[in-house]
Length: 114
View 1 (cartoon, rainbow, N blue to C red):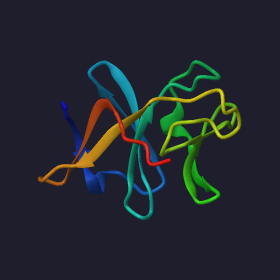
View 2: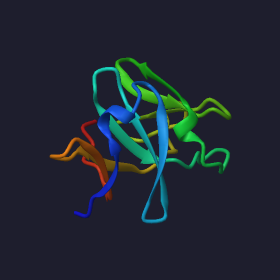
View 3: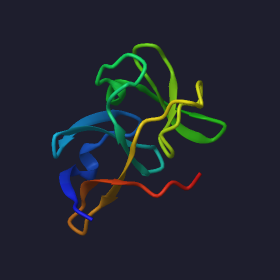
View 4: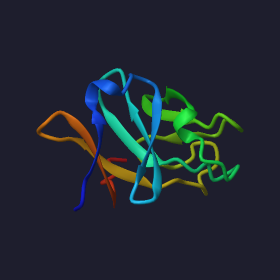
């Protein structure tokens, strides 16, 4: 698995998203208040705009989520599936903190725990 170094863990503010370009792919990165990291495609499939990193982070039934800033569809940060339309989902990518404390992303699919 190939990993791309993005930024220091502390540079990611809790409950805020950032966008990173990984091998030509826009990736939305999120850090929860609990310190969990999530990475998914930045493309909102409903609008076609690269905006999910600007979405509203929250939870639904205990599951971490992001709501698109355009049309407010809610996506699971764990599985990428849209919780408002189960026929739609966005790719979820593997993310970790490396030995040096930097966040790293791989475009390989993350192992979903759902």
